[in-house]
Image 1: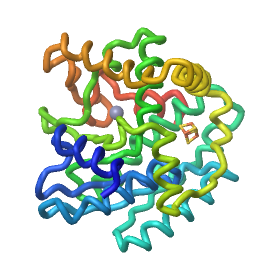
Image 2 (image 1 turned 180 degrees about the vertical axis):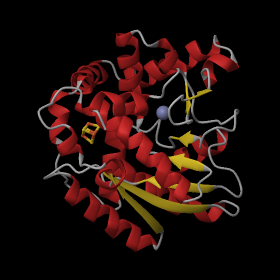
Image 3 (image 1 turned 120 degrees about the horizontal axis):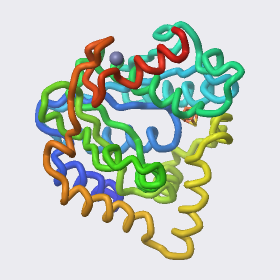
Image 4 (image 1 turned 135 degrees about the horizontal axis):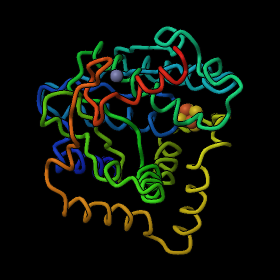
Length: 275
Ligand code: SF4
Ligand code: ZN
């Protein structure tokens, strides 16, 4: 087993991300991170007691970008012989992301993120999943910490959706959360699984793009910056009670899904889009 596989196995074990009998839905976009995640989980699978994986792919409908990644996802699922659930924004929301965002370039990632979260929940439920695994890596996680700090969104900074103490949602796990983008790229190259895919055209308008560039520079000049950010988040969490970490779980007035306010983000978005 490679060093990276051992580290991921240890992260999963120490944080109790996957337990015997779990049905794990793996969010597979077909991009680098989710490809590495699926490969790693398939490698580790034989060591786990009665755990099953199902790949789930969301087709947002982004012309010139999504077609290649979906083909890549299908090839990978075929190689490992897994069940594969595919859901498109068009089926679920009546239009592709391109159509939904027509004449509206800013905030694309917020819209996409909210709709994709919803689509992942639908797909994970169809898969009968007890866990939903996503390919977020250390870079993504450190960027999110910094973005939440920049926005002053402390509740979101500390909210933990990896455990379902309230029994209201499928826990989301991030087995690559301490693995950097560079390490994932190296792993894929060594495994002969590197795929050169286009970048989503909407990233041009995202705050995350600027935060990413800033953090990359800092990481280069001061190695360990991203891990230190994650460490800071963990320390802040240490000052919060269980209730704060779980967030105030209520039921959305419109759809009944668990949320922290009166109306969930998905229903707010649906109303603002007039859908
Ligand atoms: Fe969606 Fe933004 Fe990611 Fe593109 S970059 S897939 S719009 S979240
Ligand atoms: Zn709702």
